[in-house]
Image (cartoon, rainbow, N blue to C red; front, side, top):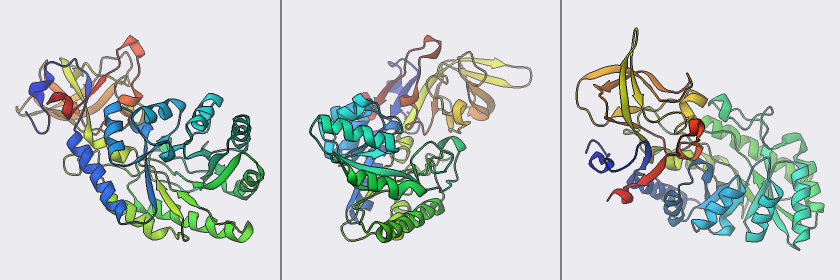
Length: 387
């Protein structure tokens, strides 16, 4: 055993695989429950796109969270894990008819609508079933988040949401439709946000819009969904295993000027699961190059694509060795030059067969795995699986 890794139990498992420390997951969920219990009229929906491992989903559901889904497949996963339909929200710019029908048939809480054509189709499909679909409008707030360009979602140039200038018109259209019921507004400005000032800017924009809608349309918005986006400490997963939910919830709850009866919704994903997960791999070879040495793993970008896709940093540890540190480029076996987990990484002296843990991989790891090069998908195991 090194750190929190039961390496004596790993020997029977085929690498690479994901290991989820459910002690950390439960501590994270307990803190979310404690912090939101201090607030009135709050619902937290876990963003399933971060990790849909069935055992992870069941654990999250046990703590009373709802589900934020962006596909019909995620709705199915949520239902199979036992999430209550009245806590399921369905977002996404391209909802297929069968996905909308799935949500209608199961009576999900609402659809987060991103365009007029989508609103019209939801009305049409609900009419065919004799139902009324609850909808929130996803608004593009034009708020810049200080994060990677590929994971910002709240700028005018992004594909997400309805333009601020169109919100009044779209609400009016929704109110005229017989088979949709407008119940609120939805926002999301991006992911891996560590600057609370970004959330403060979102709150200011929400407040401005609420006042405008009250003045122009004389309506009160029943539900305000501020999305997710809270980041995690990829550099120091041991030091900060749980994100700063206290400051996150306090900031938004303090700055959003809620009217009586308004329900505030959150959609955390990464911040719930990132730190509990690690990608466990074995060293295939240590290769001496012309001017550096490589630790070649049996895990690759097919198992964890974030470093190749976003140049994302993950802490890498040799959990088999206590020898002095040496410097390696840690790479995978995929036939792509971008198949690199980290360059100039200091690891305890590494040998063939050593276990390598790539940390903070519980979010957008297993769920984004592919079978490129005809590789098998990695499996996921929890602490309970190894007891």
